[in-house]
Image 1 (spheres, rainbow, N blue to C red):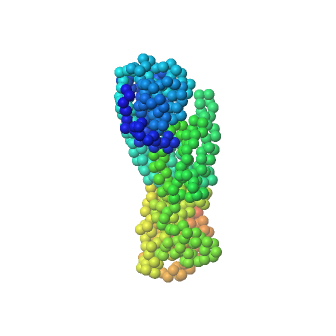
Image 2 (cartoon, rainbow, N blue to C red):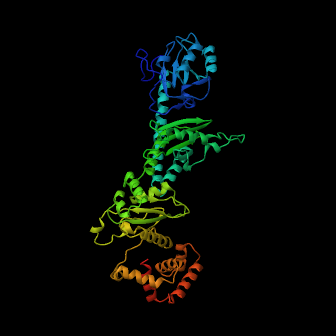
Image 3 (tube, rainbow, N blue to C red):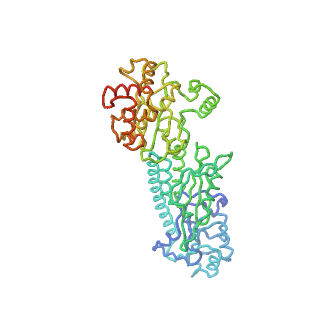
Length: 522
C-alpha cells in the first residue's frame, strides 16, 4: 500500500511551494462521496465529516509537508509514524483535506494517539481496510472527479445557452440577471460604482431565515455593496473580481468591461463548482449589453453637446455625431407597457444602430432615438423611406419619422410621436410617417402651410391632434381613444367640437381629404 497512486511530483524531486499551488483541473470531491463507495470499505473514525478532496497522495515520510499542495487525501500505512500529534499538525499546516490510514502490515489497528490528534486538530481520519489497496482509492477519486467534471461541463453548457437566450430578449439586461440568479440559486445585482442598484433579480440570501425565524445574514446587502466598490473601476489597479463571505452567504463581485463603473454583484447561500464560469459568461454578456454603442464616438458626442449648449447651429454639430445625411427620429414604448430603463433603451439603440438614445425623461414617456443617415442630403434625389433603417423590434412598439434634415428634427420628433400613437392604436409593431407625395407634393410648401394655418385656425392644439389621429385611423373611435389615451366619449366630444368650429361636415370625404392635407402640413 506504499506505492504512488497518482502522477504527482516524486518525493525525491524538488518540493513545490505550498504557498502558490496550481488549481486542480477538476472540481473537488466531497469526502462523503468517497465514503459512499462501499467497495472500498473506508470508514471515518475521527475528525469532521465534511471535507473536499482535490488530490490523492501516498507518502510514508515522517514529515510529508514539503510535498503537499493542499487539499490532498494523504494515504499512509504509518511506517515512520512516531509522533502522531506533530504528524497531524504538519498535515493540517500543509492544508491536507484528510488522512487515510491503512492497517496492516505495520499497524494492526489505527493508533489511538493518531485518532485523538485528528479529533483535536480537526483533520478527517479514514480507516483503510487491509484488502483495499491505495491505488483503488486513487482510481475511485479520479473516477468521481471525472464524473463531477462532466456534470460541471453539462451545467455550464446549459447555463451558457440559457444566458444567451436571455440576452436576445427585448429586455436583455434584466433577463440575463434573472437567468443568472436562477442558475446560481441566489441574487444577482447590477450596481453603479457608487453602489446604486440598477437592476436586481433573485431572492436575497439575507432575507432567508433559520429554523428560529431569525435572518441568517441581515447585513449581507451592505457587505455586497462594499465588495462591489472594491472592483469598481474608478481608480487604476482595481481588481477585475473579488469574493467574500458574510455569515453563511457567499459574495462575489465582477467589474463589467466597457461599462463605466458598472459591477455585477452576486450573493448565494452555496458555492458550487462551475459558479465562477457561469458568472464569467454573464459578465461578458452584460459588458456587451451595457457598453456604449461604438457607432458614434463618445468624444464626438460630448463635443456636439458642448457646442449645442453654447449656441451652435444643429447643422454645424451634426458631423460630430457621425452623420452627413438625413436623420430619422424614433419613438418607442415597451409592448407590455412597462417603463424602459436606460440599459434596456440602450440595448434597443444598439439593435437599431445608434447610440443617441433618450430614456431618462421619466413619467412614462416614450424612449426617443436619433438614427443618423449615411447619404448626403444634396445627393438624395428623393426622401428615403424610414422603414429602410427602422425595423420592428421584439417587445417594442415603434413610431418613426421620415428621414429629415438636421434643422427640422423638432418637426420630425412630433411626427415620430404621431406614428407611435398610430402603431399603438393599430397594434402594429412599427409605424412610419411617410413624406408628402403625390398630388400634395405639387403644392409649394409655403402655400400649403399658409392654407393649413388659415383652415385650422379655429382649432386648439388638443383638438387638432385629436382630429389628425381620428382621420389617420379612418374615423375609428376606439382606436383613436387608445392612441390618445382618453375615453372614446371624449374623442366623440372633441370631433363634434371640431365640426362645429370648422363649420364642416366631417362625414364628407371631400372635407376629410382637405382637412387631412392641412393637418399633414403641421
